[in-house]
Length: 379
Image (cartoon, rainbow, N blue to C red; front, side, top):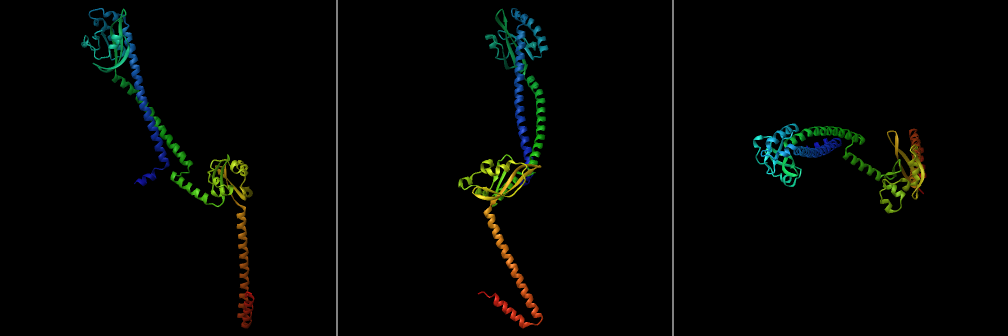
C-alpha cells in the first residue's frame, strides 16, 4: 500500500501538493494577520469616534451649565438622547463628579452610580482617553471626556460602542477578505498545476529517481570510456570532462583530481577554444591536434536542441595508441591473408590427389604425397 502510494505521488503531483500547501499556508497566515489587523483598526476607529462624540457632547454649553442645577438630568437627558440615537452609539452617559449618572439610555438607572473604575483620569486629571471596560450593557469601547464649567471639572461624558458590534463589523469585513484569499488560493493551485506540468515536460516526463539513475549511468559510461571526452557549452564553459581526458591533458596528479565543471575551455584547452565559439561549425573528424604532451586525433559533435546548437562534445585519443592498433590490425590482416593462401594451396593439392585416385593412378598419388611430405618437412 505504501509503495503504491509512493508510485502515485510522482513529481508533478508532489509539486502541485507542495506549492498548494505553501500558498494555502501563506494565505492562511496572511488572512489571520489581516483579520487581526482589521479588528485593531476598527477598534481604534471606534474608540476615536467615541472620543470625538464625547468631546462634542462635553462642549455643549447647556450640559456644562446644567450641573449648576439641583437635578441636572432634567436638562441633560433630553439633549443627549437624540444625539445617541442619531450617532448610533450604544450609550452616552453623563455623570457628575461623584460618578452619579445624569443621563443613560435606560432612564430607570439615572441617578445610580456609574459602573466601572475607569473614570478617575477624566474626573481627577482632566484627561480625555479611550478605555475598554465592562458596563451595565456589556463589554464596550468607551470615550471618556471631562466636562468643564468656568475652568472647573463638573462631570464627565462616557460614550460607548459595544465590542459585540465591533466584532460583527470585523466579521462582515472578514468575509470579503477570506473570499478574496480563497480566490487567490484557487488561482495559486491552478498556477501550481501549470508550473508542475511545464517542469515535468522540461524533464522529459522523468521522475527524480530516474534522473538520478540516468546521471549515475552517464557518469559510469563517461568515466569508463578510454577516449578523452569534453562537453562544452556555447559560452565556452566546460560541463563535463572524463578521467581519460584529464590523463591526456595533464601530467600533474593534483590537476587530474580537480573538477573542471564550469571552467572556461579557453583556460583549460586553448586550442579547442576557437571551435567552441563557432556556433555554425561543421563536425570535426580525426583532426590532428597537440593536447598536453601528445598528438591526438580530435572528433567534435555539436549538441543540437530544437534546431539550435547549444554546445559541443569533443572526443580525442592519442595518435600513438591508434597507430599501435592500426599496426596490430595490419599484422592480423597479413596473417589472415597468409592463412588464406595456405588453405587455397592445400585445397589444390587435395584436388590433385583426388584426381589421381579416381583415375586409378595410385602409385602416382603415393609418389605425389611423399614428395609434398618431404618438401614440407622442416630443416
